[in-house]
Amino acid sequence: MQTTIDFNTGSLIALNAILACMMFGVSLSLRVEDFKRVLVKPAAPAAGLLAQFLLLPALTCATTWWLDVDPQLALGMILVASCPGGTFSNIMTWLARANVAVSVSMTAVSSLAATVLTPFNFAFYGWLNPNTRGLVTDIALDSTNILLLVVAVLAVPLLLGMVVGRHFPRFADAAQKPMRVFTLLVLLAFVGIAFGNNMDVFLANADRIVALVIGQNALALGLGALAGLAVGLSRADRRAVTLEVGIQNSGLGLSILFTFFPQAAGMILIAGFWGVWHLVSGLLLSLLWARGAARPAPGEGAP
Image (cartoon, rainbow, N blue to C red; front, side):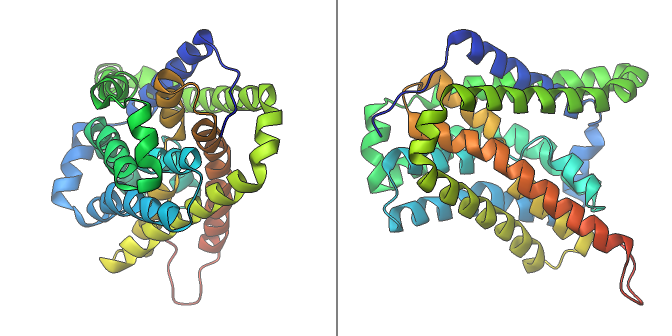
């Protein structure tokens, strides 16, 4: 894909700041107990993390290889699949009346695990797919630098938010919801402006990008649901795992792309459209589940 994306250094700094603020806002409510919960009741988080960091990247790699997807688009899909769950999965889970505790514990663990697994999966599956192997070699992928970026925009804000939340609980309670709403609106505005500046590029490739993103998102949601069923989770836990796996942190993917591969237009368009679509699909699914939960079947309690 021989096209370029209109983006600058100032926009990159803004994107990284948005991601850091989002992670900080989410982690204000995190406690050490959220990590301990994974050890006490590991079934749901383990099933979700397996689907998120093993099954989704592996199946994305295999599918893009089988369908002979354009190397840039395929590598963009592999990068998104290598990212942890999105920070708004907790809100989607709450709207769906599912198990928020499971979602929060998965977000906490996956965000830390991503510091290692995101660069590893991106490099490994990008190399494993013969269609993208040459592209990975050409762009001189440096996993160490990607790891440092992930630590800066995920791990550091997460730990800082936990410290602030523990020592200033009133501030955390008051600031958490406004920060989430504000950063969501800013991120959507950011993505919207970026798409507006590059609308000609998007429209020229929309026929492939839209189908690939919707298909991959459906795969992610399906894997989350199947993982929950496989280990016998309750309905509320399955829904939490489904949303955690289906809501990817595509903003992190964009940050990696704009930092290290600013000329990879196809990869950027995939991650950018993911950032919009997974919020649409996640919100629709959450509202559908919430509506069903409000009117449980006879003899069946709400989740």
